[in-house]
Image (cartoon, rainbow, N blue to C red; front, side, top):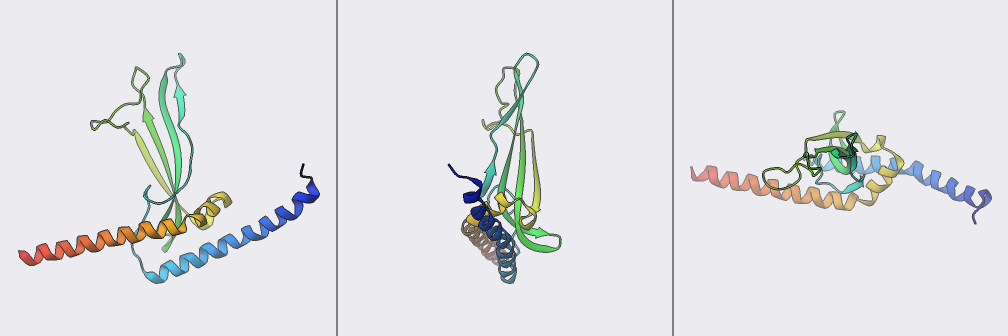
Length: 165
């Protein structure tokens, strides 16, 4: 069993390393800014940092009324006039039918009643989210690369189409 004397130096090291998290994030922000990417990633396309399970609200008789969940993704966007890594916080709400099943959209999937997105600078996020984000930076860069390649292809196809007119 761990006692306080054994735990104390580990926690001290953790706090010292945690203080370096913001330095690393600021360095990443600066390096990404020099690329002049100009593409936002502010939806659920980025790597997942955290996600709650569905929380179901029930009526007085116990029938499900709706359910909600929150997800956080790593994103990249312009906030406060500066391009930076961000936490994309998504809140979903789905209503249930009278039979107690989620309402279905015309295409057959569970219909989302409301979907809210909040963008938070990564530097202002919790330690847990910042650590999770650092572990997912490579994946974010890959997603940005794919998005850039799609944009390039779109521009080239539009140029070719315009040239044919």
